[in-house]
Image (tube, helix red, strand yellow):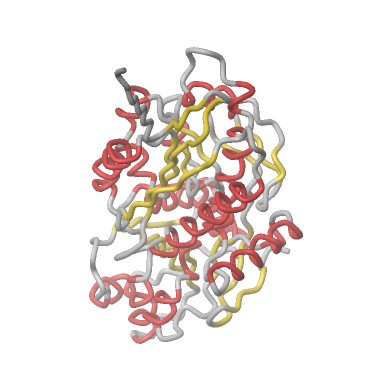
Length: 373
């Protein structure tokens, strides 16, 4: 008697007689080198969401497996990492914290029927990408425009806008410039060199032009810039981006960023009760709360929004339709999702609405106060 053993292995989708038993999802973000507060916290938040789901899911709901990759905040690493996730784990969904990286994987998403969710940024570029790309995050233009609105409110007349040379910070700079231009406020946009830590010569030149405010959209290297400007005697107010809460930013500035105003998000800006429940669960699992809370809060919402749909995959997935195709239609139906960041909806272009930042002042290490409330 011949005995045949047939083993069917689906790395991304485990199937059984009662339906799909396992689904693999990936995450790509900065876990080292630069902007780590935009990647480490989100990766942990997604891990927490997946763990909570797996521990409470019904028997007919699929188990989720999460695989995390470090892009070192380099957009060129996104595609190789995505290919690894597909080859090694056959992921059906990838969450990503990098706009440039999101653009880099566009050519593969439709061909692979993989759904992509950017849980960090939400901007005009992302809204123009393919139909498998979604964003669950604040508006890049809206959040960074808050500093320009503040400058208009204060009646300042001449502004320097410095920015790191990537898509997010460039779009933030252009959003601020647009508002200042409309208010007829003189401004100059200056793109800094990647990796630069010494801005003294730049500030010596800027100093002669008597700028009344400095907007610095960048990462921890702008901590050095803030210190160097103050050392030269520049006392004009500083404005920054949400990355200001990176502890390395403060350390590099040696305290010079105290008083800087910047767009930020706290539980008070979202669903206060749910946000604090999340932060407490995060601290219990990982030992402490994240330094910058908005990236993991957005990632937690993105993961849970995804999970809310995957719960019903065995009941709602039509025969012959891929998980990616089915999820795409499911996400487009989201008109109300109660997240930690607020009540979210997905627009026709795949971008979310419902995450609204406020303007805060950096008062000291780990200490901020709301400027707009």
